[in-house]
Image (cartoon, rainbow, N blue to C red; front, side):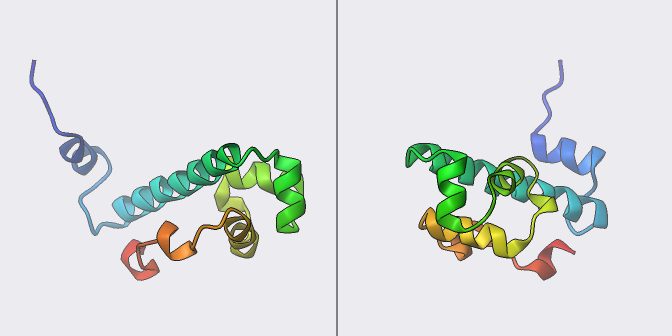
Length: 101
């Protein structure tokens, strides 16, 4: 059985770094990472979605969307949640937008 490195498989099936397809894939992976980080920190702090929503000034439904499908929410809502969870957004989004497109 031939062993293949994950990066090689991604290059082959998604596209090499710098291609539009790969940049979109990498952006989606990053978005999912941010969503999981928010979910995990909310749980660590013992906050319910309702409590976090109230503290951040957004709806409970928005918290659910942020944790599950961050693409469909406004960035300002994400920043409010990050502020409540005491996360600096530059620690979350370390890539420049121009690197993704």
